[in-house]
Length: 102
Image (cartoon, rainbow, N blue to C red; front, side):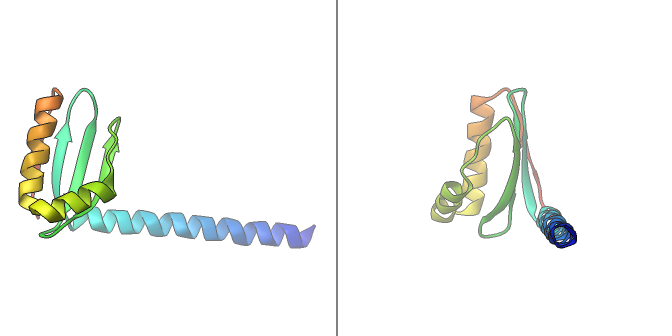
């Protein structure tokens, strides 16, 4: 019984460590990236990007295929992609987008 408790404690510690690590990485990426913040009644999305690519996103009530969109952004260029996404979002929702550059 003691061995089982020890194993569960170790596994729990690993899970907590990984969770904290992911939170720290997301916070760092979020704070060091440019952002396109799009808000609407239908849902919100924030795209985080640097000079070359989309580095992450957060969304509520909106689906977003990061891998596919990263590939497309590399094809057209990050500035063109952000302008195009902003136009699409504003045309297809009741919302607006704003850029927050760091």
